[in-house]
Each structure stands twice: as structure tokens, then as C-alpha cells.
Length: 152
Image (cartoon, rainbow, N blue to C red; front, side, top):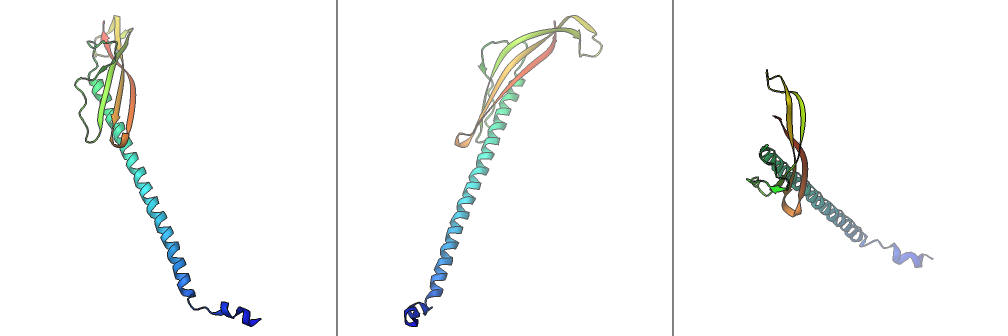
């Protein structure tokens, strides 16, 4: 019976087999960690581009807020003019549209002006700001803003 197990009792070369097995396991772990690191980097860059696109859209909204006035009462959406400046790799664009007027009687917010029986007008505008960035990153911000009170 011992003669049958004698070829399996020779342990020469076993260290090589164990060493190769450990090296394969370390290679698999290394490939996994490198791949995970690359994925984390892609996620971080995507978040950065998305946030930059949002800030570009917000910049377009701020340019649109500066362009609101009672004189601009165009009921169709028009592009912001002057257009917002490009912010590095991010491009802001936007539109402004007159949405309507509401009138309210009441006191003026100006000191000492008193009650105005003619009322005040509030001009409402719809603003859309779009920010685009690298790798198709895009954010859109919709805002409804009022300009006023304007004495009537």
C-alpha cells in the first residue's frame, strides 16, 4: 500500500506551485484594484464636469437677470444678448422670455413715498440657462423671476 502513495509523498517542487498560485492571486488583486481606481477617477471627473456645467448654467441665469427690465417685454424666448462669457471648458447659453405682468396696489418700498393708489406692476420673466462641458456634461436651470415693483 505504501508503494502506491510513494509518488505522491515526494514534495519537491511544491514550493514553486504555491509561489505561482500566490503570484496569480496577487495579479488578480492588482488588476482589480487598478480597475477600481480608474473607475473612481472617471466618477470624480464626471462629477466635476457636471458641477462645472451647473455653474455655467447658473452664470447664464445671472446674465439673464441683469437683462430684465420693463422695456424688454418680448413674449417669445430670445437668446441672451450679450451672451454669457465662456468659462474655460464650459459654455453657458440662455434665453429670456416675458411671461406677463401683475398689478398690485399698495405702499412703495421707497422711503417716504407713501401709498400709491395706481398700484405697482411686477414684470415676470422665464429664464432658461444651459451649461455644457466636456464629455457631453450638460445642466439646465429654469427660473421664473419678477422685476418690480414699478409704479404705475
